[in-house]
Length: 268
Ligand code: FE
Image (cartoon, rainbow, N blue to C red; front, side, top):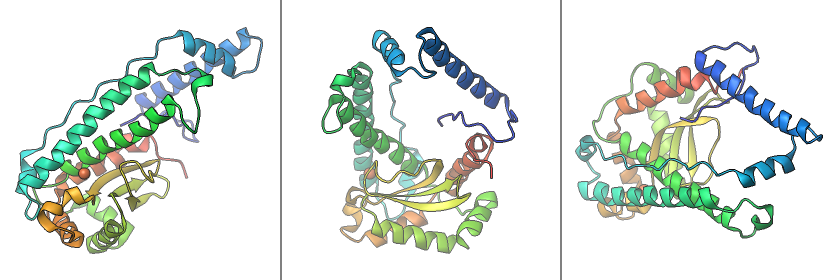
């Protein structure tokens, strides 16, 4: 989870982590202000910051490692072992390409003369990183919540009922959204709407909704079901819904709605 530095309106440091984040944000702001004052210019001196950036080495990004499939995913009824194994190979490709792109982004030119919205190396690398890294994150979510079938319960069931009316209504909305999507559907807790929503995606990186945490990811690319169902996507979605690991989903919901989630919840 990425840490946010957003302050709440009451300025209470609810957790030590929040206080640390605020101090970090202050120090960063103070550093920029000092650079601006030294240059005898405006508070945020872009040119001075640019000069600093050009002389400093860009921090090397972390390299991603593959998360293996949990054995329980092979318990899915209606989604075959062969499908999961082939699907995992695509995920491995996204991990590999993400690492390649992260490495190239560390070394790409940040000279304004080289940056261009029509074509430039930094544009292409960052656009394709969103596809590759989206592929990693989406598939890790998908594989994590399948197998070990169970039922929604507790706080998650209460939130589903509050947001959709019932688990059946949630499932009907997810299925319809999945039939209308070209690549992905996510159930996410949206901190601004303060409810669960089923959001649509056509590829790994289309239509992201910020300030929302996905807790269910449904892959509706043909590779996720063609071996088992041909073009019958609706039957695949029914199988997906029957095989959900609600304990894994509940763990994600607890993280999204717990202390880590409240750090990025906007005050109303
Ligand atoms: Fe996929």
